Image (tube, rainbow, N blue to C red; front, side, top):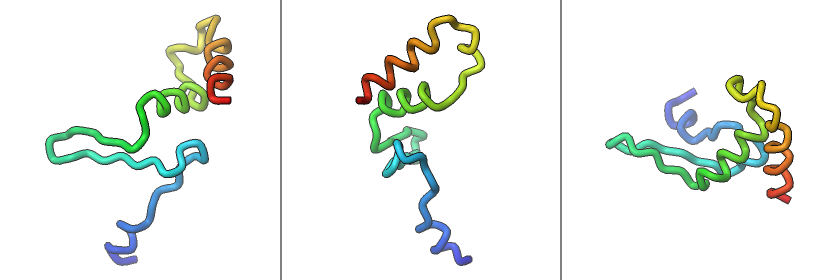
Length: 70
């Protein structure tokens, strides 16, 4: 595969994050086309955080974020 073909190919992302793009400029500043709040909601809903596993209210938090999306 040539270098140009690999650059044009976009990575697979979850359906909730379709169209998500992120880049880092020469100064190390991160820019994204999605708001950080939406990214955090997605991560809270779909990623298991080992530090929060033992919290009693974690299921309530997950339910709250999923209701807010509807």
